[in-house]
Image (cartoon, rainbow, N blue to C red; front, side, top):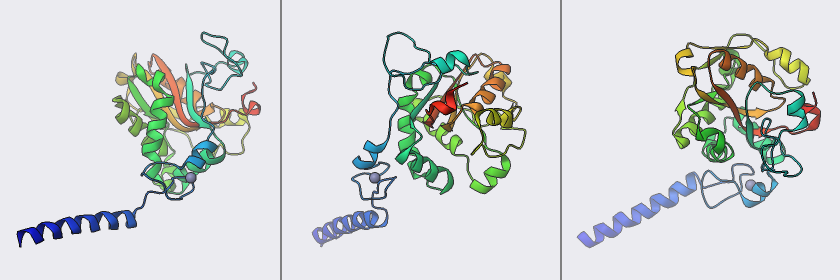
Length: 255
Ligand SMILES: [Zn+2]
């Protein structure tokens, strides 16, 4: 009887495992085809992502055509230095990466955040190594109500957890209504976010701190610049920017 009981329990457990896989089988986060593990993308989607690798411009984090050794600065960064020290992104904002970010942002597909967290921790390893705080770019309250969550905050929290850094979700807040940056030129974007951010009562925490600012996409860097300016004005020693994706199109970078 006891023997039968053990078998029954084992059978039940394996049935439960099968049912669990039937309910949530692991699917590629991008194309939704079956894959072998959760929180992953398939080999085909992986190969479509243009991961940003060295050699890079140390300031803007854009790929450079060749490595001349040492710290390299792109012509775009030299002509128009950003308010932050260094920006890094996982991949170019293109193809599958664009789809992944879009799903994450607008279609409530939050299941990708673990994979994104691992990618960000890797792409931002140098920035995070001596960071004191991880701070997300805040969403406007109206937009937060529509989307129900701030994807940058979700990413920042995951990165802070993985790298054991302090997560500071309320260091920044939006103080001005801004229109969506989509479709705006580089100059319009800067004007749109000028004066849009403020430090929200975290001045003591920011004093002398190395901050990693987290956003989903760096397009022209206008938002990151505006945030870096107020963080530094509040006493941050250094502000680096880390994002999932980055637009590396020269049209956006030319001063
Ligand atoms: Zn796929």
